[in-house]
Each structure stands twice: as structure tokens, then as C-alpha cells.
Amino acid sequence: MNAHEERILAQSARGLAAWLAPRQWLAVAVLTLCGVAAFALAPGTTLPAPPSTTTIRALPLPELLPLEVGAAPRYRREGRVQRGDTIGSVLARLDVDDPAALAFLTHDPTARPLYQLRPGRSLRVETDTDGTLFELRFVTGNGDLLTIARAGDKLSATAVAAPVDVRWSMAAGEIRSSLFAAADAAGLPDAVTLQLADVFAADIDFFKDLQRGDRFAVVYETRYIDGEAVGAGRIVAAEFDNRGKTHQAFLFRDVDGSEGYYGTDGTALRRAFLRSPMEFSRITSGFSSARFHPILQTWRAHRGVDYAAPIGTPVRATGNGTVAFAGQQGGYGNVVILQHSGGFSTVYAHLSRFAPRLRTGARVTQGDVIAYVGQTGWATGPHLHYEFRVAGVQRDPLTIAALPGGEPLPAARRGAFATRIEPATAQLALARRFVGASFATVE
Image 1 (cartoon, one colour):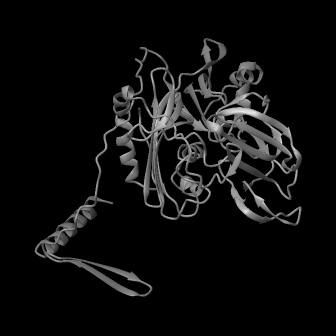
Image 2: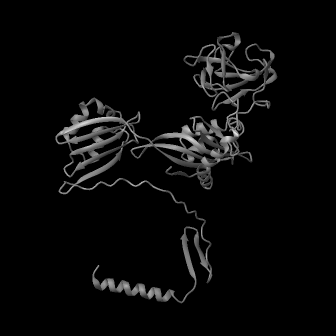
Image 3: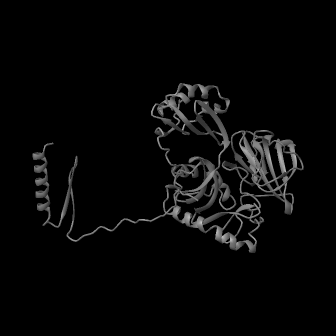
């Protein structure tokens, strides 16, 4: 475009502005296949400002190193491993042109993790303008930081346990079909979703209590090594709105190293017994005084709850206790019986196998995997038969109310607890406002 054309465009723009200036209305016409639609704003009309939230977060600044006088320029690049990549293809994509370095990576045993690349993992290199490799940094699958460094003409490889930086992440979602579908839509890792179900297991039956429109918000730890996210940690705070009732949980780590989840008033969320011996399953037969037995072909009482699950599904202890029996027992097949304090006992039947080192007299903790679902004994399909007994008498575990609660926080620790959960409470309130979004913060 020459100077004459630029002057014509400038004059045209000024003329258009002069034509619009005295007019205090705005019309927008949209042409569609169906016709023309017009929208206008009257003089003096203003649109309400969209709701906004100002959030301030402290971000860590990278360390800046002084550049040596006269030093040749070096370039740092980072790339992610793609499906089908080899270490050679990744380095080529990062403009590394160094046959000697590639030969070193091929033969040095410390660099072996570079030949077990997983898609999505990042790799950082430092090169000069010719593509000579001066440094390579890679976080291995076991959490070590692998560093390849050049000193003169020699390359060396070191792998050390890298310091872990823990940051808080947030997510919120709404139940449309299932908990896992909502969690996936919110970007919540599967490990955190399982924790969420476990934290509220004493108050919410995730087999039958969830309904469309239930909401959750979660603040959880994310572990970083060398700036790369390497996995999710514990839930710090969580909220679940289920059937119109709001449940909250906060992680409290005490000075003695003990930890647990509590409500805002210090009430323990971990009850003496979990609602279910499996994290997710389906009830096929409930507690009943009369049920047609599929094998005996007669009407008999069914003094337990059957959960359908594939063979090999982990079965967990619903409460702290001692193994009273682990072996074969008639129609139960492979069975584990746990004795709990207060005259309570639980039965886990039709198992395929027992957990390693599970023996009679062994102590187990609530949530420990004690066995795996099977089809032994009188069973027409793979499932777990679970019984809850009070003084030796079977009771319905889904409806019994007379269960002991967990130990609340001692009064002397309530003040420290209230102080510790303040940041998590603020983060939870922020996450609650953005259902379906995920966030990351520095903590």
C-alpha cells in the first residue's frame, strides 16, 4: 500500500466517524439463512457488567542467573513426549544435533529411563547454536530427577530423588450421570475422586444416594518436581452437596504426625465403620428375611448384602479389628471374619484369594485391602457377600443406626484446627463458585 492509498483510507475512516458521531444509537444486523435479525440499544442504555472475581495468587519467580561475559549463547527448550516417540526423535524435535550425546545416552546405564518414555512427560534441554547438548533434565517414572550434563568434552548422568513442591489445586463439578463422569468433566484425577468417595463414605452411600444435581468442590494437593506435575496427593478440603444436605471435610495434620478428616466443628468424619466394603460396586441382593436361594431353590433368609463386582476386585475392611478367621467355610467359600471392639464383627465371603500376610490374629485398619472378590462356595456369579454382626447377630449394614462414631478432635486442638483450615476454607469457597472448572494454586 502506497502513501496515497493510506491517505484515502484515513480520510474514509474520519468520514465514517463523523457520520456516526451525532447518532446515539447502535444497530447490528445479522444475516442468516432464515432472514435478517436486528438488535439495537436505546440512547443512554448501558448493559450490566458481567460478574467478576478478583483473585490474587503469589507465583514463584524463576531464578535468574548472570550471563558470563563472552560466553556463547545457549538455548533452553522443553518438549513433551508424544506417542511413538524415541529419545532420538524427541531430541531432534528440540533441535539437538549431537551424535556423541546420543551415543552416551544409548550406553550409560543411568540414562536408561530415557528409553522408557511415556507420552505426556516433559523433557528439557540446553544447547548452543550448533545443537550441542549441554544439559538434559527429565523426571523419571519413580520420581527421580535425571540430569545429563556436559563438562568440556565429557558427559555425565546423575539421578537423584528430586525435592517435591506441593501446590494446591481445586476442582468443582455437578453430578449428571455418575461421580466419575462429573469428576472427569471437572479435570479431577481418578486418585482424588476415589479419595473423595472414601472421605464421605460414612455419610454418603455412593451406590444409591447420588442423584442428578448433587455438587462437589475439592481442594487437593498436586506434587511437582522441577516444575512438572507428577501426581496428586491428599485431599485438603472437600464439600459435597447430596440430596440437599451439605457435607464438609478438612484434613488436619497434627504435630505428632497423625492426620484425619474432620467437620468444621472438629467432628470426625471417619466413623468406626465404612458404609461399604468396596469403593464402587452394585448391590444385587439386600438384607432380607425371605429370599429365593438360587442354588438351594428354596426360600431362605438372606442375612447380608451382596455386591456384584468382577473377580479380583479389592475388598477392604470396614473397620479396625483383628482377623478372627481366614480360610474356607462351607457355603461361604473363602471367607474372612473380623472381630471389632464393642461386640461388632464383619464377614466377607465368596473371596477368590486373601491379601498377602493376612493371618488369623493379624490386626487390620479400616480401609485396608483384606481380600479380593471371587465366586467360591455357594455362589452363582462373582460377588462379595458382606455381613455385619452385633453380638453375633446379623444386622442390615445399610440401615443400622446404632454405630459408634469416630473420635472427635480434643478440645485442646480445636483452636489449632480452626486456624489451619482457614486457607483451605477460602479456597473451597472459591472452587464452589466455578462448577466444572479446575484451578491450580501455589501453597
